Image (cartoon, rainbow, N blue to C red; front, side, top):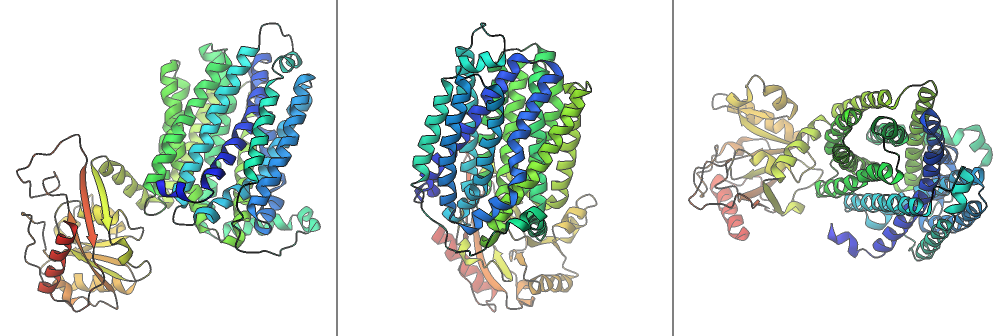
Length: 607
């Protein structure tokens, strides 16, 4: 995580992202708070939904041009000129405040969003160019935390100023704008600083595109069809986009209806409290984003998104049953926490799987589909509200969407979700350190051979590897009635003394398929800290040009999962440190005694 801050230009980029979100959010909050003060009931929900629709609509209209610009030109140039445009827009917004021009100010939310829609593909595409694939998850975690921090501070900052500047001496929305007009200069100041920093961003574009944008094809919808086709060509990208679209749709509807729910069901009329409760979700997002980045230390962990979708659904179900502010605070923080855990892995997945030449189009397409979903959901919410549906019913409807979101992610990332759940448990107990991971090839068959020290060695070895490992497991355990379906799903290999040949043939087949197979030559979990006699069974496996990598696991001795308990007492409040060392490749024909000597040497190296 710390290494990405040392990347040249990363901190400057974070400041640009922060100021862009802070300024855009400021104007939106001012307009939403004005609506909150003047209107009630379904009228309030309808107008709030329209504001959100105006913010989202540009992402539909400029989908193709925004993607084209981000792929055709240097992404830092797109951000620079967008920042200039933002300065002009905030000056017009400030003019509308001072003159009480509510309709103009209302419409300016659309133009400010138009600037963001053009800016967005370049902003998110710049991440991959700046930090590379290695740090893409960590960077997305930090950027999500920074963006949501800007949103939180923007909500608090502009709402507090709005309430403190406003008095009871107003009779219309026009009066409110005139009273809070000086806030416009803060928007201008933020956009000017953003512009200054944007002009300092380095050009990271290494691929020069000569593509020409044809306006006729744009209006005929050809660009739209081609860009959607690009998204659908990669199943994992498309799943991530649909999942994010459903998530943001749920979020938008909750933001649109919570004000009316709080006013009608709890009796809260102060905008600081209403906006503050929703802003608390941002604290959760920051925590969730940072945790998501940690879970992606070795690879993009999409499994955590499936678990988070279930968490989001539970929170949405609980909110309409809550009337206590304390409970609502907890629920909104949890909603944000699960949001961070779902946003970061899926955004990282989209960026990682996209080719550099189509990165801008994919991100713009992501924005387009998400926006299409959000606008559709907001329109449905507006229609429901217009016909008198109360906020509670809309919460229940969103929980149904949450169930569907959970189903999609669990169905497609079931195995990863199980591993993520286990990782949550074991990371709370242990601290894992790995050496020699670079010795394990990413695209070849691998036979891992090492010591067997605990009941969780399978987890310890799998944690840093994205490729699924096939372990050999005692046939009696493999045939456990309730566990067997999971063992089959995990591609484990049953082993018994009577049918060892079948087990070795199964292992050979996995290696032919360029899989990773793990064998513990000791044959059982050791009862001492010393290596037991190594059995020769692995020598009879057809290696099929597989790479043989010895390993040594240390640090589990004395734990509840180890047979060797030892005499030394451990601090229950301190995480146990587990170290794993992977050797360089050894000969396919290495004998059991020689292999044991290699692993003994790894034990010495570890010390």
